[in-house]
Image (cartoon, rainbow, N blue to C red):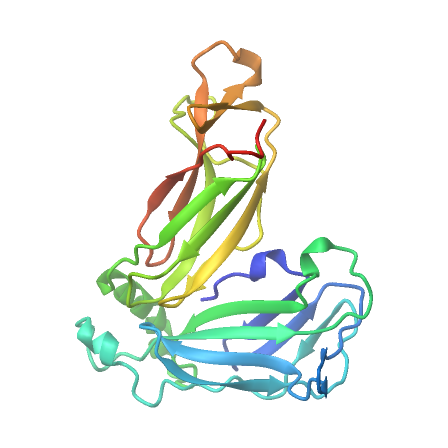
Length: 293
């Protein structure tokens, strides 16, 4: 399973789970080329990878290099060499410690990163980082037995059931009425927080006319995030729901139905935190002290 496609980044890293080969998907019309640093052109131009156990221990790292000097616009580049699998060096001590058993394979987290240059000012603001990232958590791809491959999905379920839930430290604040920022930290756990998901919702609103309490549409700079022990992430959230007006009441952002402003149809803004092995929590967003007037 993967951790997402880097928040809709125009340059994406996709792993073929059958042959462990990487693909770079360039949805821009721009040609990508290596970055130039202080000592010249990056000689290690390609996808940098690092592999970890679920308790955050580094198993190895390296680069799957690109043969071509450029990646043309609106194209998919398939890298020749597969991503190496490092689980054969018996990494299942944690799995066995959870009581799952020695006969089951290991689960490793692979973090991927690809840096590039596009030469001109890009047509979109969210590709100004010159970097694409993705995270996968994987089991051994080298075993061809069909029944065993099917059991890989059961393994993920078993690990999820037996692993302790990761309680992330999450702080969210309003930048204005439509834009928010959350800081996530995995500081108290000894395990990776896998596929952490943020959802912008209306809190305290139970009327059936709205049904789903999610605030839509909402745009996230990143979501489905995997955080190793000690890692942090900052997520930007943007939403403009025209059905509600917003005001500040007792340090909370309160949403009022535009059609019934004088009724009791009030809701606060709450950010829900969840994930594959992440403890669910609700973060109520307070008014920004200076940005909201």
